[in-house]
Image (cartoon, rainbow, N blue to C red; front, side, top):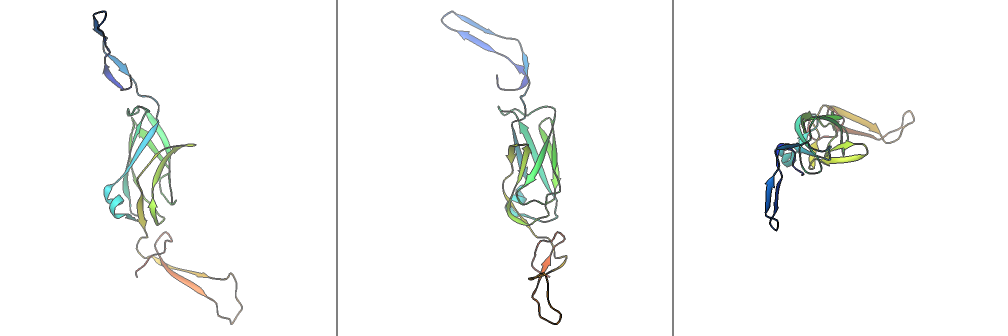
Length: 168
């Protein structure tokens, strides 16, 4: 029996012996957590999200037969680009919901559920854009310079998280 639930019943037929019967109702508990489906909001998948902008993340944990697990399970969340404000997700009876904020701009970022060393599942890819301009970042091409000499300085517009952005 692979379907968890309280109303399972076995039916038996042996035509050559003329036997037909069924068991009483019995319960089947789900197995251990085997896979997690992480779902990112469709607008984030289609349009991306700005760094620092919260968006919803939903999760469903199932056993090897697709039954939603019971009880509580904590998994580690990781993303490809880094800079995510959430490190853990707690599934309660196989489901979880969490607001997530990404701080590192990247194309094709995704979120993964991990119980070391096993990756249990991940989200579809989405883009994280730099946020609004919040300041300037200046860096020199060489770590030192002589007094009275010219030095190259690179200046960029950045958001609150240091992502290079456009505009101003």
